[in-house]
Length: 279
Image (cartoon, rainbow, N blue to C red):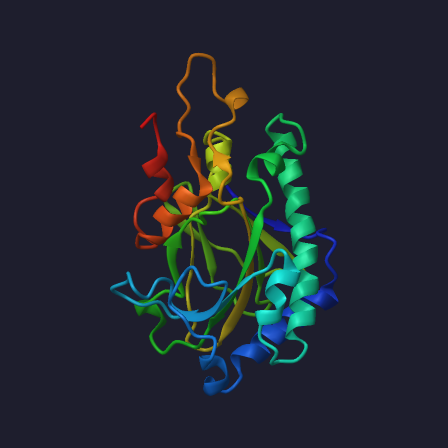
């Protein structure tokens, strides 16, 4: 099971509350204020958009989201929203703390696989960091659509700050059953992404998850993504492949993976399946 609550993450409850509040404040701005940031182009460094991949979908999802690049901060923060006026300061403080937490977690995962603590961090290179502030409005017919359809994350590690009052995240257990991940006070949720499944030769599994929507209440979540550097070469660590066995996955660059991921529909078969074997 690759979705985990972390309680002792070291980020203050006050900061988590501020992040949620300023995110909500942003989405409550007048539409004309937000329209300046709107784009459907996935490669843009900052964009406000809707659904997942508007150009590819047949059925749109019930979600608005603000997507930001967050590392190095000094490069990207100037283009972030300056309204609400506290947005840049609160979100950049949170980004720094989340990055440190993410790197600690990658160290723990390396050790758990019997590797040197800095092994995975070194393989992933100078990691990019992205953030999606997701806003799920109240939905009149919640059984007809998702906030996000089922998918795995294409990156290495995702740290999710969830709305403390409204649940919506579900994860797939044993390939069969959708389980609600209910909000817990002051907890963050960590989801392992496709790159950790590939590096671990399948020992760790990327988590299938989706977001359901709610007729009565709006919901906000803030996802932070640690992403390998584009030129990082990803493939099963030799030490984790049994003697005489073929690795489950071939090696590839993260750039190749990410392009493939965004060229598809979100809920198609696992993108990682396209990288199996010695092709």
